[in-house]
Image 1 (cartoon, rainbow, N blue to C red):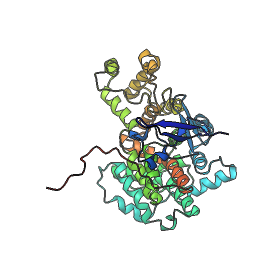
Image 2 (cartoon, rainbow, N blue to C red; image 1 turned 90 degrees about the vertical axis):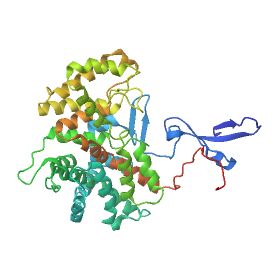
Image 3 (cartoon, rainbow, N blue to C red; image 1 turned 135 degrees about the vertical axis):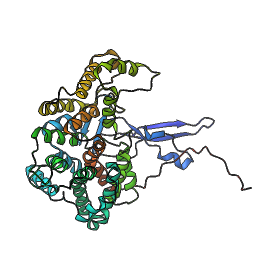
Image 4 (cartoon, rainbow, N blue to C red; image 1 turned 180 degrees about the vertical axis):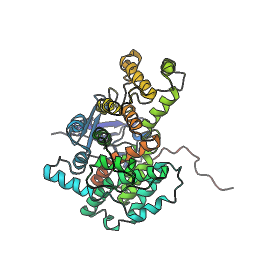
Length: 424
């Protein structure tokens, strides 16, 4: 079979450069431009939007068709039939677990949820009004100071233990960030609770009374974690891979991913939805803001509609919409003014030709923001929850890279500064 090549002709030269074309399982072919370096050239691609920085077998996205596959399984099927921990196992290992494997994995995560008691003292150094993500970046990075027995990245068992610890301890650390902010005592995880139940328990329980976790809210929380588990080579995942390519330990790499996720253009979208709803303030002002959204000269944008990757619809949003209905009904807050505004905006986006033509459908952030607000989670914690859900994706990509031959990441640049000049 003849391999496909792309041919590049340089202006003013008769030389034709042949560049190999690689084919994936599905998706577009990829032109290998590595051979250009030997000719003193490289490509220019701001934001790496047209560059495959790695080869991966974990997640596939087709934004035009609204497809998201984890190890080949559609996200809709995983959300309906699986749960977060089973999806974690799938991302890490490549296949779904059998019942015995699933039980063993869930048990391993359950018994890694506690953190070193000394780590509690670490929180005392942060002001009460510190952003939870600022605390999380520091605390997760500091885990490497406590777990020296799993820092050899060349050791497969060390990588497995580090992965389990990170997945298990992220909800504990996230809840501790919240408790620190509100001045309540930290709540220890309980081994008789599921992953999502434990998080809600550590967030909202106090030593004064037994926890009362709604099954519907626990299911909603688990689904939010699952739908955010991985999303291919996004900014934070690429950051984790780039940090990992230096040989940095896994706790430092995940901390770097958290820092990247903190950016409002990446992990802050669902928080921006709530900010927008607060800005609108009242149903009577919806038409005014819809008009502003349609005005190309007005900087106002409706947050939570459309997606940079999904040009048709966000497959995760369909799942979230049903969960959102269940949560609002369970909590009896359907008539809350904020949620009425959200519902009216959703209806307009699904029926108005302006939004339909531009495919500005409600995305996963629109619904997840409403759900988290209804549960009682403050907006400052939204990105922390995103980080908890994304951890298995980050650690799976890190492990995939470390398990195979890799090179330290070293992007190039187009230099436009001064040429050489002498010091006067």
